[in-house]
Image (cartoon, rainbow, N blue to C red; front, side, top):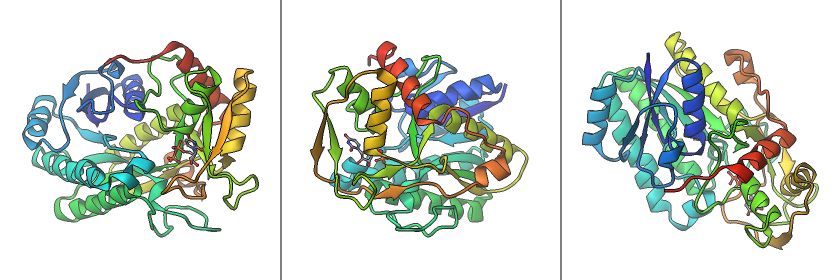
Length: 327
Ligand code: UDP
């Protein structure tokens, strides 16, 4: 079977990607330092513990597993934290990626699927966010991901590395079979926090800002189901296998929901009230991030199948009630 090196395979999106890769006939080899991931989430292939910045360890893992491609998820990914502590984003995400790409080149592994973000676009009023849109990130997380996109271009020019870059909008939901799910410690993402508030694991959900220029004053995001998102990665891998060259794809549905709309849907799905308080804006947050692109559908044949807000919250709720990981 073909091995794929999955950095961050013990994390939320990486673990779901491993499940999809296994279902598609690949062997996902997880490379993860467990700084935010969970060993228990590694269920679909071998686990190699290691840090992105550790060149020797990476060389050893490439030599042992001879992967045909890399799926690179491992990253720090919290907007708020990136504004308070940008250095760790440049160190872990950017330096770590440079070490990883060099190790891949040295091992002769030149195909990479990279997990980027719509945060690279920044706050752009009345602009359709498609892949050709200018990138002006307003937080250090987005800046670190944009830097890695630039790095991939440089590695292509120098070594012929080919990349499929996915710019994610807001990933949500969980494996419907609840084998893996979203579990961050601490949790910072909206939907799991809403569910924590629903079942009393926290007192209330704080809405970060109610004075944005949107219909109800709260930020708008484009939510995409994690299973749909990782399905696109398998298509991206096949794209590279078919030698179709480097390409950037947005992954979003094109529909935006405000924070208050997410809360309303959570109340409908769970049948319970969501305790809410209104707070200050969170530094680094864009007003509206909604994909305006149909490229993934047109070129990869990607069709989101579970990405309604109701289904995403229902799958997240199922996982929330049954699943968790212990270190
Ligand atoms: N949000 C919120 N309260 C929270 C967490 C998030 O109001 O406790 C808002 C946040 O300001 C943003 C949206 O929910 O508008 C999605 O935030 P999340 O952190 O889930 O994802 P991001 O958009 O930062 O990738």
